[in-house]
Structures are given as structure tokens and as C-alpha cells.
Length: 390
Image 1 (tube, rainbow, N blue to C red):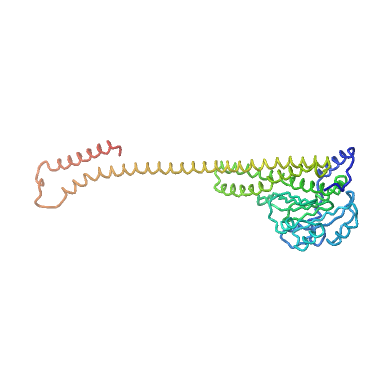
Image 2: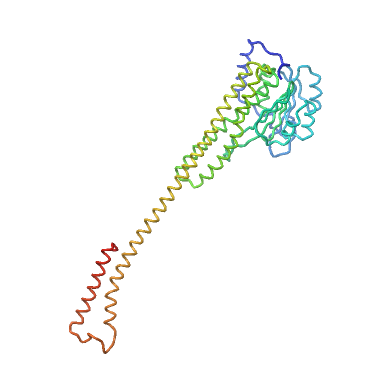
């Protein structure tokens, strides 16, 4: 695919490398592709607003910007006039007519065009003749709601063109374009170098997401052992985001290995091969971190369920103990009530006002009644005492 580009000599490759690293390390200036939609370089100031689908179309020759046509028709016309030019066309939520126009001009495969129209595709890399079609899932961490926002990016890479179709706010390709233009030695390698820069930007965008998720997991662990009742919902929501994150990162590992497998066949520049291997290493590291996050969240959820169960058991045991103590108190009260009821019963019988009644005129009637009360009370006391009611 990049055979049409002149290969620099080995002595200049190291200079390219350090120039690119310096450009990548420098803080990006304000985005040119996130201004109001009236300007041709903008498309992502408000993801929900109606914006022009053509973010920017630029023609390059030998790594240097030649022109920036305002329409696709002008871009096609100027590209045909140049012998060794390259067009980099950026689109955001393009219309069907625009994609069909690009497909007719650059001979894009209908299946790839259909995927770019519908979006919601899994990350993948497919080759149609001399054209590569790449689907990427970019991510960014939103601090306020503590959520991960995913965007979708489709990239067509041909012999003399790169077309990016963005669905969503991420990633910000204006920074990628700016850094590539600041490193013409890398940009002159052609469309493959642009693809590398896009891949590198998407993968670098995962770094703050990983850091944000790690911070959330640390907070969740604290909430779990603190007994926060809302932590289960937070674990569930973060687990769902990690499923999406895993779907975005895991396919990239095989994609980059497949891309590296074609280095020799398609004559990829050696220095560019090193850059792509570096991206593959970062993707592998990120994918492993995401897998670790999912496992950690599963373990935390298990620990939280165990702690909740232990807390419920402790509450049930406390209720049982309270019920037992209450039952003991009731038995004591009932025992004393029965003991006190015995003399009341005897006294009630002897207190009835009848003229003809046994023992009314008996000399020992009163001592007998008192003794009977004492015998009954003492008998009941020992009976209850033997049964541990008192």
C-alpha cells in the first residue's frame, strides 16, 4: 500500500523517531476540530448538535500540507492533478451521499461503506485489495459522572488517501493531524503512518480511562468494607463499563498482530514497524489491565455479598438473642404472677360472704388459710425454679 512513497535512508530514521517523540510529548494546543461547526476544521464542540460532516480535507505532498479544499469535489479534483499527493479527509457523522461519493472516487468496498454508514461495529481490521478498513472504539473518562464515554472511528487507508469517519465525540483527531504535520519526516511515509498515528492516539486515550477506573475501584473497595449500602449498584455499573471497555481493547491485540504480519508483504517502513509494535505493546498492557479490572470487580462483588450476608446473619442472631432474652423475662413475669395469684385465689374463696360455709367458725381457720397460701406459693416457686423460669 505504501510502495508509492519514497523510503528515507537509514541515517534519517533516527532523526524522524526523535522528532516524532518530541512532537508527541509536547502538550497539544487548543483543538482545531472542536470549534463551532461553521469553521471547516470543527466537528466535535457539541456531540449532540447538527454539524457539518466534513471536518477537514487536506492534501499533502512529501509530508507537507499543499492545500485544504473546502468540498469533497475539490479534494478529488486536486488529488487527481498531483502525482505523489495524499489526501487526508476527516468526516463526522457523514451523510450517505458523501460516503457514496467517496466510495466511487476511491473504489471503497460496499461492505466497508455499509459498516461506516451504520456504525455500532466491533473493532476490526479488514483488507479489500489495496485498501484497509479499520474500526476503532475510542474511550474517554468523564470525571463528573464517573463514566466511560465510548466513540467509534472508521478509517479507510488506501495508496494515496486516508478517510476517517467519526461517530461520537472521541477521539480528537485534530491533535493527531497537528502532530503529524509537525513531523513531516513521518508524515511523508504516507497513509500507513497516518494509520499508526491514529492507532497511537486511540490507545493513548485509554491511559486516563484506566487511571480513572483504577481510582473508582479503590474507592469501591473502601465503600465495601465501610458497609455503604449503595456500593452494589456502583460495582454493577462499573462492571458493565468494563465489559464495553474490554470489547474495545481486546480485538485491537489481534488487529495489530495481523497488521504486523503483513509488514514484509506490503513493504512497511522499518521504523514504522517499530512504532506499530510499540502500539501493540501498549494495547496488550491495556487489555490485560481491563481483564484485571473485570476480575477485581467480580471479586469485590463476591466479598460485598459475603459481608452483606455476614451482616444479615449478625442482625438475625441479635434478633434471636433479643427474642430469647425477652422470652426469659416473660417466663419470670409469668412465674411471679402465678405465685402471687395463689394467695389471691385462697383469699378470694375464704372471703366469700355466705352464712353457711365450712370452717367459718373453726378456731384454726385463719392459720390454715395463711398456711395454705404459703404452701402453694412455695411449691410454685420451687417448680418454676427447677424449670429455670426463675
